Length: 142
Image 1 (tube, rainbow, N blue to C red):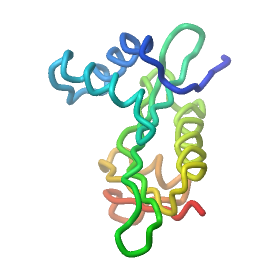
Image 2 (spheres, helix red, strand yellow; image 1 turned 180 degrees about the vertical axis):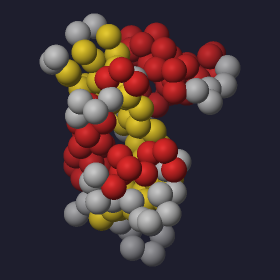
Image 3 (cartoon, one colour; image 1 turned 120 degrees about the vertical axis):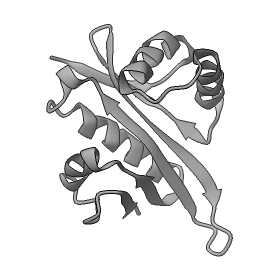
Image 4 (tube, one colour; image 1 turned 90 degrees about the horizontal axis):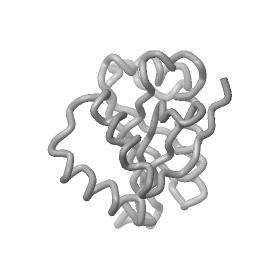
């Protein structure tokens, strides 16, 4: 199975909405679409989408919070990473996470931070990036 990970575009909305619904916890479709369209045009947001053929099978999302007041170094917030259940354990999540790290490093981040639910702790530990609680993470990327 060939998987392609690329930057989300406006025309990916329908596919991303499908993934958002599968992930759960979404609000009103029109509000989510408005945010998505703003994020794909913003240099402060990055949403990579994984495709297996024409099927969207996963996505991730990171945001540049800008320079820290004291240090001037950028901190990026890793908000989401989701892969459809039937495509898990095939390296797709790792590809998405790698793209997040590459984008963050390229865009001047010194730290990548996130919150994780306990269910994702084992995935995060595979990269050695999740503390014992499984709820918060931070990794230096420089």
